[in-house]
Length: 372
Ligand code: FES
Ligand SMILES: [Fe+2]
Image (cartoon, rainbow, N blue to C red; front, top):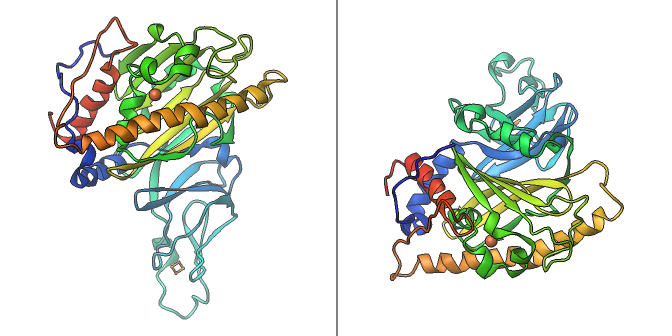
């Protein structure tokens, strides 16, 4: 735990949220950091693959014959065609353009009629591999071949998550339907994370969430490259958000942020877990890509119904509330009358304190080579 709070009192200047030249620099920062790519449950069998794009970089992950999950740039080394699309299972990877084939380990296996051509030796050609690491079963990729392993970058994070959510390894991927679903927001990616990292706004802006939670007991802890929020509910089965089953449901929310753009959490309500990546599209547009997990077997006969009510509340209420706030702030950041704000921090009042957001900004400024 980091116990010396930084002294900065002013928030990130508006230009960090609005300037396309900043986003160009952030692109390198993000591509050379650990980016959430999926979950091992999506790659259960050899040949299973998933694809993703980070900015203009197309990537796929595949489980090879030895059971290892590998990541590659999704590009054929012959002339650059994309190799695979979507997700599925393939015994070999055949390029759609000229049908060069590659093994699941990325090695070139064959090409048509190569006998009398001057095609290069097969052993000299293969797919370009990318680093993969994981937190529990969440898979991350990093385009920096020299990146610190996750255990050094965010020491203690995996152990903390497992201590707080011991059942996490038994949960199964259910898609992106539950809390933390995929959507876009007309704000900078950091505005969305700033909003995630404080509960100063929870009372004024989230009336139903405020009714369900005991916001005054919320706590944010700061760690190397991540934060942890413990957020107990008010233990009200009937509340203004969605019904809680106090016997079977999660009654304390637990939320993590991993620098630069991943969040994890266990939301109150039906058992489960989610992870999201915030992808900047422009300085003023972000896509949140999410993955939700649930129990392999329902905890009780009404679990699915309660999970459905939570999803409806998340989609129709709290996501709209947060998106409206973030989009409103993004317009504010463009105002000539606004250049920089102030943090509210108080070690004894985590319900209004913005120290976790400041911690994010400290790490961000350092990674960008800036001081303010
Ligand atoms: S570009 Fe893939 S085989 Fe030619
Ligand atoms: Fe919010």
